[in-house]
Image 1: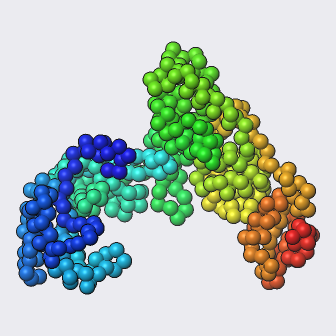
Image 2: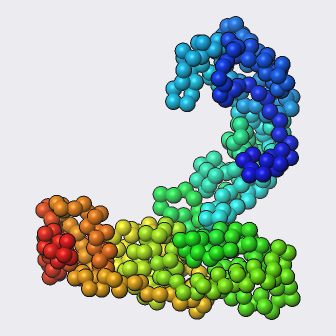
Image 3: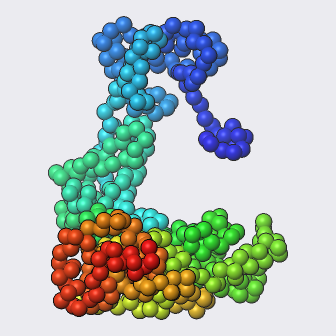
Length: 477
Ligand SMILES: [Zn+2]
């Protein structure tokens, strides 16, 4: 409804029943019922289903009567609302936060129906989450024809043992998407098999993974998966990523549909391919030579990109701007980062240990990075991007003369002059890397009172250990 152009709203086939006022200087009516009559006199549509009740029994009778004709109403309802009629009593009762004490909803039970589940289809969302959907033999549920119901996730299917061919009870309540409540086991056809959740994405055939502690199955196809592609492209060109002006959602969708931009690497070969087309962009409806040139210029302007923006732009799950910056800072160059991420798939290897040792990068983020680099098509897209772009090494220039630039620092124990996170961001801003545990790659351990195993390890490995005060003197702060 909230359109800038009110003529669009006006064109929509909307109807309303008026029942309240927003703000009024004066409220000359004394009861809610009186107000409803006033609305009618003013010419507003008012529902004929309201009743003035004198007792709780009256109210429950009205509820039952309305429930009985619910299916025949020309609109959908999910219950009734009882209101205190006298407005002075309403004012005295007041509100609890935003809920009035003088009104209460009494919902009808959710409507149920039985039907046959004909198929289970998998929908791939824009972030790669696979959602199973039940295709049902269409059935009338409280006046609405229902042919789909959500199955939520794999666990839900397993828990209820929902199988293709089953007779199921479905339910709809209010605006909620219909759900499968239970299976009628006695009606199960012979020889039916438990549902096997797909191991590969139905859109792109990439491997499907389920992260520890999560219920969702996720496609690892990333940039290659059609279902995720447009959303990923949007992220890729967004302001904090490649920041390509004039390449908005509508254009991306149109270029994707035409097969012109299917993945981020296509953006940078677009101009060359477009020039050879029978109908180049400048001849498209709504485009012209000038706007096409502007777009190609905006793309060309972004061929040089910083490593941290590049990493962020890839849209790897859990890798936001902060993590992208940490990775860029730690690995320094695109080449080093790519090599390390591919090598990290060996969980006993050094690359994995190095990755998870970066402060605030845990096993869960590491898994997402490894998953991304384990897909061959992601690597292909990366290679095409690397060829088309100049990915600048992480900028350490301004911090190169600090005493800790390039060093790997570990903080342990209690810090007294600053918080742990202040210390970390200070070290990072001076070009150091901050790690969570001590290894032979550690250059410096800053130990406060109560330092435990990290200090012992540092001493065993012969790593330099300083106090907080010594650290502050070292960095000149
Ligand atoms: Zn996919």
